[in-house]
Image 1: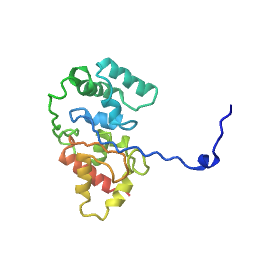
Image 2: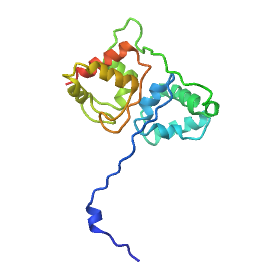
Image 3: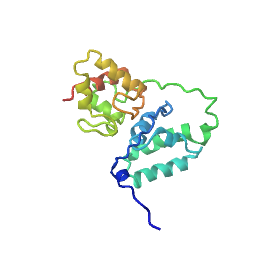
Image 4: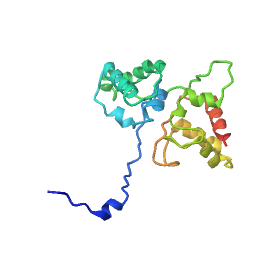
Length: 199
């Protein structure tokens, strides 16, 4: 028997609204790699709902993401990312997660001491450019649009700094920006000024 197609149904556009993501990666050293690399393609839940697994599982998953799906994880990022995933979502810590209180990572500066902190370097160091482009929409809004939105806002720096430190969603759509509390105050200032300078 052949199926019957409903022509009005075929003409109507299908719209699916997914709920906003409210989860975030566990704050700890290495979270900037998980935020910058994993969230480009999928949600935190994809990682957080995996069964407790050893490092070999995470290594195989990361290999698959790089080779089959083209994830742009550089060779030097693989081991630190595996360290983070294994420690916070692996077998050893998953069973003790309730007893180990989460602590916010201390701000660190990835810029060598004595070197001027440049906003573009901060965006590169923390993988911001995986989700943001200067002029085209990727996962998040382009920096020129952010600059245009806040150009005449006297609280622009504070708003961008809060978004960097705490993350959030709703300002540019339902996609969640993960928090980056490990970014130092000097780096936050540099990247905010750089974003606001975009035209």
